[in-house]
Amino acid sequence: ESFQNVFAQPVRASSPHITILATRNTLTHPRLGLAVPKKALKRAVWRNRVKRVVRESFRLHQHQLPAIDIVVIAKGGIRDLDNAELFTLLDKLWRTLTRRSNG
Image (spheres, rainbow, N blue to C red):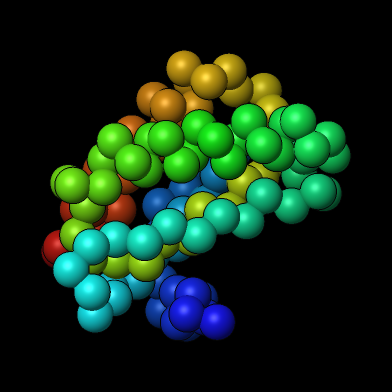
């Protein structure tokens, strides 16, 4: 419910593997929401890996991120990325997001 407003007029950063939507929040820190649909990743193991990596990446970057609510949506191609590639991709997307949110 608190993430509904993210879908209204989001700032977005995306790749073929992942879409990140964000919107300002009234807090002093960013918050993360995850959408890892079964359609994109059929096996629970795959979904859990993606969630784990995204959470970890967010944890490492949260201090550079503005006060935004973020929803990370996994897409089908994400399964082809190993953890290192996923970290690198997220790295880039967090930067894009920060730039667009502050801009």
